[in-house]
Length: 233
Image (cartoon, rainbow, N blue to C red; front, side, top):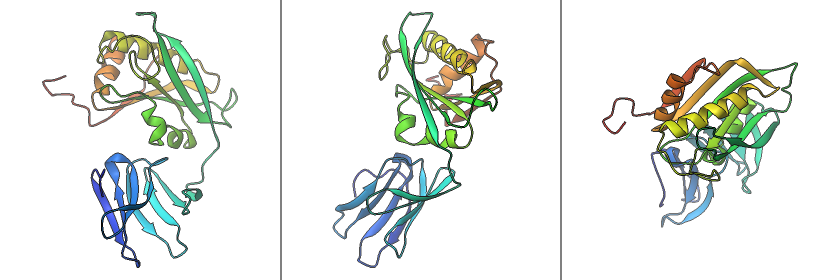
């Protein structure tokens, strides 16, 4: 099978096919003995670890912090923990340094509001990736169902944002600060509990923003494999 990246689990099925989880590219795939793809699932997964084909023909998958059961049509028929309905806001936010427009999504539980505010978290993508990668891998919705308001954005020069790529420099950092301020002011967000989750080289943008901007206050910064001590940074 092509397109595997860190396959973590496989199951030989009674028909001779093999069910494989490919964690690093968010895929579960079934291949025949010749390696031809018979069935695959790529949407709504976050680093799937294990998949098992059930007697019913459904597939049970551990992905991120969830278990999901999908049928042959790739429809989720069961999941644990049960999830809350999610709303998504699409915004355009001005970067005051460059005057460019940043494309932003905010995912949050529908039951959040002024009388039930929730923590906010900003997702910062790796290298020159667009923030919409957090839509395709399911992370934004997964965190929203766990009770967070989740903002992800296309940094300047990426995806649907205008401007020129700044490679996590001061311009991107100022744009990130502007996005954080908007998140802090949403009526369903508790502005005293804001955090950042960065991936890879996104750590440069995240740490630079926190170091250079005191507002809004950031309570935590978590990073996934950021090169904090490498010569490239």
